[in-house]
Amino acid sequence: MTEKQIRSLDITFALGSGALLATMISLNSQVAQHSSPWVASWVAHGIGGLAALMLVRLISVSSSRRRSQATTPSKAPRWAYLGGLPGAMTVVLAAICVNSPLGLSATLVLGLTGQILTGMLADRFGWFGLPRRSLGIRDIQVAVSVLAGSGLLILSKV
Amino acid sequence: MLALILLALLNGAFIAVSRALNGRLSLSEGAFKASSWNHWVGFVGLSLLLAFSGFPMGADYTGVPAFAYLGGVIGALYVAINSHVLPRLGTLTATLLVISGQMLAGLVIDWGFAGEALVSGRTITLQITGVSLLLLGILLGQRRAS
Picture 1 (spheres, each protein chain N blue to C red):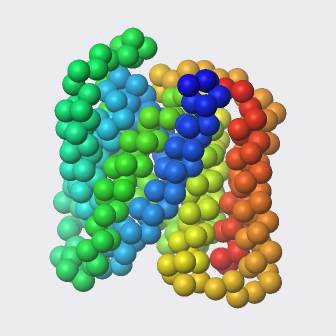
Picture 2 (picture 1 turned 120 degrees about the vertical axis):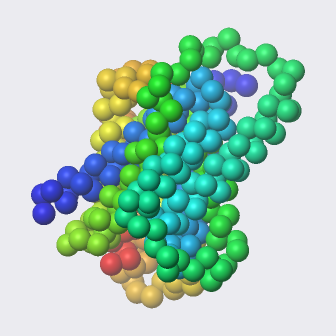
């Protein structure tokens, strides 16, 4: 596959994962209605953990004969294993903000802004052991477009 | 109010950090192991949180439609796929694409499954414009060389 094809595939996967995320949130919120956001998240993390382990098993069984890629970097540092902590914390933070004078819409828009700003900084300075990437005007354009579009959709619900 | 605004921004930052850490982990361990670690570390964290704040005994697990529990399975896939592509796209591009996919899918879910109707001209205008801007962003993002 050409580099362009790989990138198109990556883009499609990223968009698809966003769709999965929306679906997950929708389903988890139904569980939350009968319990609470943290219980729903706790249940989802448990079930998801089991599902992920099963997928690990399936993958290792099916690719046991394949050699690992030469491009794999050295073993991940300890902090790389902790992604689940900030992830779980967002349930708490989101609930606090939504139930405060800030409200749902502002929480959502600020959350998106926080994500995008962090993404920019992480790329620019090469945080988290990931490659450093220079930011161009195109990146700013895309960010503004996505943030504005998302903002309007959020506004349409108000 | 300022504190709440900062908290909401921090919430977003945590989401991005979580993705980036999982992305880094997937480079060494693979996407599904990264998803597994993310879920179990989060599970332990939430278990402690619930243990300290008192597990809500009023939770009604049987009242939940069974398919709703699939949320966890879908989440496992989401983290795996996202972790896999993030190191190659970069955190910003991956984040923008996830947001776009999320917003578009959310719209479809609201229309189709929650039975929301486009009740007003204002709603229709905002949503068409919003979707157009998202699609523009996706299109612009593709032209960029990696």
